[in-house]
Length: 177
Image (cartoon, rainbow, N blue to C red; front, side, top):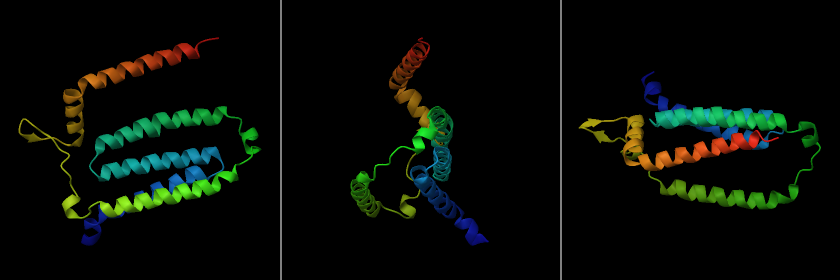
């Protein structure tokens, strides 16, 4: 039982990592777009669990809210608006398969090369991601907030203004008749 508790995070990592990979393959392999969207949601949630396992709670919450919530709603609206009956009769492009296979092999080779270059083990288990403010250690979420609102306040506000202008523009263009 003690071995299970000691290796619990590693087991969870492998389970949710494998689930994320299988669900990501389902996104591109499933023919029904609704099943692909559900696979995409499973991928997003699995990645959020992986963030939690790496003590990146802020990224996990952003992953669930932004991708699991907002992006999935957008995808579901697009799927509902597309004529799925006409989509089933569309011709598939198998002529791209050789180029896709070559590209996939190049990407896998690059991944294997990078995987072999990265250090693993206890020395790399907890990188220095925490900041200290006033002599006390801050957690990951506090460190992100501290950096965002102190060091990067101006770019953060400029980005929020751009998003506001884009949202207003989308509303104005959407209300045209």
